[in-house]
Amino acid sequence: MHIDARGLRCPWPAVRLAKALRQGADAVTIAADDPQAPAELALVAAAAGADMSINTDAVAPTFVVTRRPVGNTVFTQSP
Image 1 (cartoon, one colour):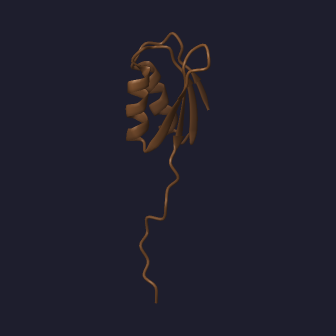
Image 2: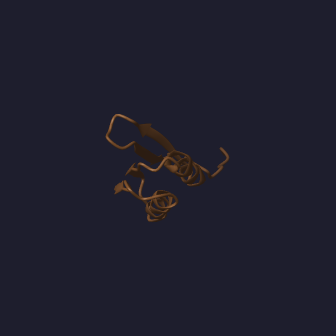
């Protein structure tokens, strides 16, 4: 999923990321140019158990948020 949040001031990029993650997106790419975006997007990603990386090669910084794989949380004993 891609979100173009250029021109939107925080908290809107973070709100849109949170909505995408709540709706089940496993990977979200966000173009955001607000100076507060990196910090706010990182907080949303961490709260959702996701990793975030930043690509600064584009015209506007692009943030890539991906969910961490979920391991086996069920403990089973061997017979």
